[in-house]
Amino acid sequence: MPRHCLQSATADISVLGAYVDWNEDPWRVIAVDYYVDVNLDQSNRNESFSSDYLQIERQLPKRFTVFGRLEDSARMQYSHYVALFDDHRGDIDVALRRQALGLRWDYVRRQALTIEGSKVVSLTRRSNEIRAQWSAVIPVKNHTATAVLLLLLAVAAPAWADEQLVLIVSANSKIEQLDSLEVRKLFLGLTVTHNGERVRPSSMKPMPMSRKYFCRTVVSMSDITYDPPPAAAGAATGPHPAQHLQGYRAIDQGVAADPIAVSYAWAKDVARNPDVKIIRVLWHD
Picture 1 (tube, helix red, strand yellow):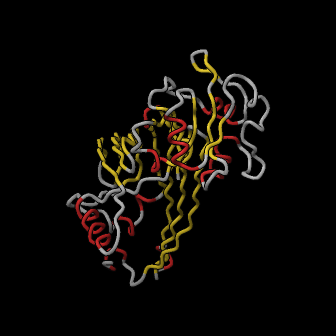
Picture 2 (picture 1 turned 45 degrees about the vertical axis):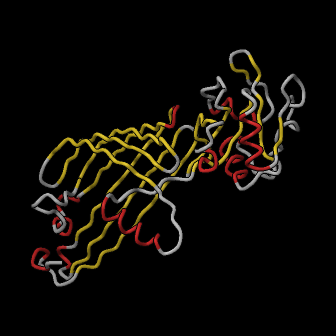
């Protein structure tokens, strides 16, 4: 650090932060707040500033997610420490405020395309930006993982994709979307219809690790309390009782063969199965 810019031989940096990640399908809110204190050896020149980040996301059909993001700061423009990172060549542009709106498309397993437009106020200018990004996770084994990872970081610096619990139906099903209330009612054993026909919930018994995420996100119960249909009221009667299947393969086959069946699974386990389709994301990490 060029000490002549700070007019100080040392700078002790203290950072306090808070992070919130709230998810209530189909909404997700991420908020971050940082407070930075710069303690210089000349006590009359100590600096402090804060930086805030708020992003709101909403899931849409067909694996699309729309999001808006606000970034703001206080006193950052007066900081000599921050000014050290402002590159006159334009390689680094410190943003004081940003308003962004974007759309992400998780078009295949572990890959996504994102386009984002934003208004930016930096230390030296105001600008409008449009960004396009491809992000992916490429699983590899043995020692080639390190080489591939370094290559990807050097070329594109991709972001890591999230783990997703998704709602699935048969590829031949006419069901295109169920809202969060309909999904909850369905897996509590209440009647849900689509185009005049009763929809059937299919689940694994016993459920795997996805159970706790499903219970927390969809039916708002603990995995100990939740008793899936037909134990729930109303599920054992009617022309289409609930069905319980053993294992992921049985779920795929059972849902694929039944156009009125609805189930859930990890996206990575069904993304390449042409016999089922994903109609919504229930939970993501």
